[in-house]
Length: 278
Image 1 (cartoon, rainbow, N blue to C red):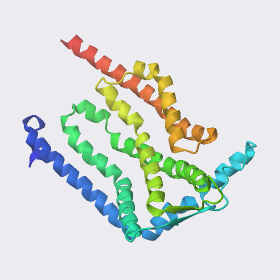
Image 2 (tube, rainbow, N blue to C red; image 1 turned 135 degrees about the horizontal axis):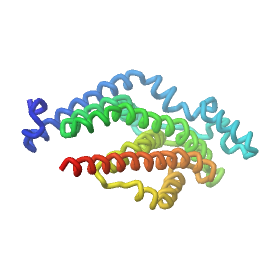
Image 3 (tube, rainbow, N blue to C red; image 1 turned 180 degrees about the vertical axis):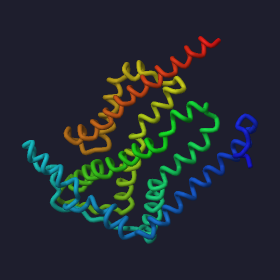
């Protein structure tokens, strides 16, 4: 098989064939996890998807206590859902069930997707690089799941609390379509999961010399502005919500600078060692 050939002996078509099988295995993992999620309909929808619509949701209690402790108003408190969720198309609920299962399958199978990605790129790496990057799958998975949890427990409740109670007039009642509500949950969770991969992305960009710590420091102010803009887009338009979202992203940015410094220093040491040998 192509996967068993020496990497240096593989043609472009061999690499494509190898990639195809990695993608097939990753897709199968997602589909298997999606089937499990599809069968667990009650837990997925009643507990997870519609959890943030309930006043008893964990985040509302914490945010309400913090808000009261700081002497703020009760905007972070959620007493009851001032809206209804409806399905307005014949296949609306079935379609939502299918796509939610696939999304859950992707999240559950994410470590295996990374594993297949690692199996594809690792043969072309130097043995020392493979050794130093051994924790890639675990660290990337942890960051992704932290992002998913942040999106679910922070972004979703803030957005639902604000958008669900917002009215331009008392004559307008909020009745949200099921697909619109699930889209909010899905985009918040997946987007945060990807954003939390920032340190890993910076690691590889620094590895190939595209990003340097000086570059990240130079444009730190611009990054702060971009983070605040993104926070303003995905959260309610109040300062407290934007700060809650911006803080972890800014921490990740600072961590990325430290990672870039480490990688750059290591690459320079390696280059000097090679020159000395020559």
